[in-house]
Amino acid sequence: MEPMPRRSSTARSTSVCRGKPICKRRRPELQFLDLPEDIQCKVLSELPLKEVMRTSILSSKWRYVWSIHPKLRFVGATMCGRMIATGLIQYTSKFVRNVNTVLQRHSGMFVEDFEVQFEFNRALIVHLDNWVRFVVASQTKNLAFDLVPAEFHGRNGRYLFPIEYLDSRSTSCLQCIQLSFVFIKLRSRFNGFPNLRKLDLNLVHVTAKDLEDMLSSCSKLEWLSIVRCHLDDELKVDRPLSCLVHLHVAYCDVTKIQFNAENLKTFVYRGEWHPIDLGQSRELKDVHLHLTGCITLEHALTTLPTALPTIQSLTLIATTRLKTPGLLENPSKFSKLKYLHLDLIITHKDAGNILSLASCLRAAPLIEKLELNFRSFAIPHTRQHPIRSLPGCQHNYLKNLHVMGFMGSTGQLEFLLHAVENAPALQVLTLDTDCKYNEDHQGIRTYLIGLACRIGKDYLGERLLQTTKLYVA
Image (cartoon, helix red, strand yellow):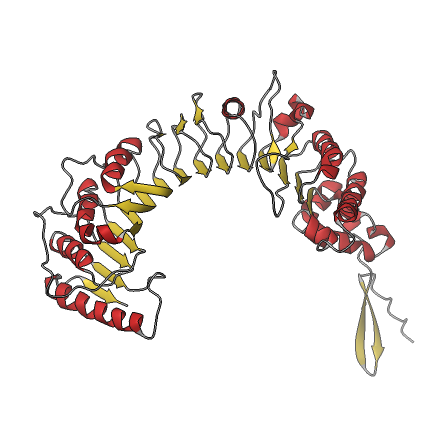
């Protein structure tokens, strides 16, 4: 009799049931908890903290595995639900207990991200101070305090951020800071943030001098956003910020903006028009301006090319005054502008002066694409109104012209005829009748749209080159 064959010492054991082999998998010898802690941190960092905490139910060994998660994000609505009838004090206490429980597990450990999102009230002050101390001890790279209340009045009552807690080691570690609804007061000896890449300030109370001193210390800053920080003064930084590529300023009540940022590429501004000095930003290409006040076309074409001489793309949203239907004399030139988007609210008094927008084409001799959005009601043209024209001015690079809010008014037709007749390279002309200001009352808007489409085709169709595609919708 032949001896029985020995069972193979592999990871699987095989037996026979009803003539079919059954493979039983052995428990893997290497488990997740056997991996080095730095690899565990890397894996867990790809999951939200809430999902990692749920792994604690898997086994006793997994009970505290979440405590090595390097990215901590504490959101009141997520951790405590909506504010219930028990009141603000109990709601805040529950949030504080939950945060402190997690921080106790992370004591003495490295924490890459630390974020708190909770509506500020005075009961939080002591705990926020302690959490800043935790940030210092854990060598955090990315810090975010979003404390904006759902409702607040005035400029007072913000959290005084204890910047004096930050020593030279912690300021060197920080690479991203986001602060909302805090008060910043620099101490006399402020070492700065030598490795900070991104700074986001929202509803922060800070003086123009302290803000300038803080920004001057951020030599590696790449991304800067300042929103609703009421300076009532100039926003300027004389010291070079050679790494800054993106600048966003919105509703800050500034009287002037001046930066020495030679490599700046994108600039976004929202608010009233004030002097802008970015003349040293030779790499600036993309600018978005959303002006809350009224600006004349003449003022815009006089100041913007000088303030922003190197831009290639410009978006301007504003209420605009058009004084005359003629061309401006000797306007400043955008020497590199290729894309222009004008989102304009034009008063009824200026509806007959839309032809003056031809000065925009004249000020941008290299323009390739022009988008116009008329956000005002317009009456379609009738043959009783004469169509005026301007002296010819070739726009040899214009390839794409898109008009939104087109209602076939006399002023719109005058401008379009001028553009079409002076654009020998025009490839696409789009007339879009959609306008949120023209609501449909008993079919009137539908009738006006149909009329505008017919007017556009009748007046522009025969003037277009055979190579130009016309789209009307």
